[in-house]
Amino acid sequence: MDTLKVLTSVVLPTFGKGVIIRRPAVEGLAGRFNLDLSAVRLMQKLRRKYGASPLLLKIPFRPQLLLLGAKDVEFVLSRAPQPFSPATKEKRAALNHLEPGNVLISDPPRRAQTRPYHEAALATSERHHPLVSRFQAVIDEEIERIISADGRQELDWPLFAAAWFKIVRRLVLGDSAREDEGLTDLLNHLRSRSNWAFFLRKDRKLLEEFQRIVQRYADRSEGGSLVGFGPKDQSINPPSQIAQWLFAFDPAGMATFRTLALLATYPEHLAAAQAEALAGETERPLTRAYFLEALRLWPTTPAILRETTTEIAVPKVKEGTGLIIFTPFFHRDDANLKCAHRMEPSIWLDGDDALPLKGLVPFSAGPAMCPAHNLVPLVATMAIGAILARASIKLTSPTMAPSALPGTLDHFALKFDARRSTSSGT
Image (cartoon, rainbow, N blue to C red):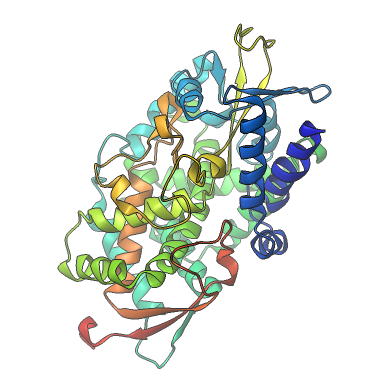
């Protein structure tokens, strides 16, 4: 019965919302019924009943270990790709629709070949990407178009998303991709198929068309873009690697928009972020911490999956057993985290993008940590700053209580009054 409860309250809602691309209707329902916090409460009950050790769910044909202790999160994530492989059966089934040669679903030898490509292009080890000045110029230009002086006041997801994906295409592929909405539509269609993983056949014709277009941009290798900055190595299947960048910037945009909602709920933090934006410095530690808090409160990767590559003794499980790290449980566990349901940016001010010993892993952790864990917060903080330097924002829908933030925040439904501010110079 407890396994059934996990399947119906944790697994199905997570996959129902869409793990590769969000389904707006289900996301709205999840927000309305606060499904993520319901799942957290269920897992707290399981921990009280069984203890904090990993709980084996004896699902027919596909047993899973459900992690209930933060220390186990750190233990598992620090031991990739062996004995805990990121390339799980579920992940391979999903991403084969979109990026069949991607590092995320590669075996260890192939991962050793492809991971350096991502780390070089995304400047994984650097706080600020070498192309930061170029990125800032692109972001300022696109945000200026939506925070205009023409009397428009409402900022909603469709308006923000249109500007965001122009930014993404220019940063990843170059200025020539700015108007290539067809590529984004094609990507989203493939991502929608990826949501169905095992249950839908791969559309090879559509995938080949997408990869052909991406390869054309990779061959062009425009200066000032990630494809132009990265190494030139056809053996790593560039379209399958670049697809992940294009895909991953979507949840980054979701988190950016949610950060604006978070700031609008806390006037003192909004004022601090606006001051950082107007100062014009590249390093914006407070805004970065606010963005990481939005990712903690509303994880864009709600389930981190791993798979055992050998038999594990404690608890005794066979090779090929899946592991589930349900991030909302650790991020919103009010039994162990005093700030579970409110904003507390101070936890991120030491510069970390992950606190795995506490189970706080917005970009995962360990050897398989997201290679864009520095780039994404950088781009997000620049976009947030570009908006706040130009507009005074007020969240008009929905309303949130600062002391009890919702467990699910539907980014599709967010709306702001974004009036051009006098400090913007117009």
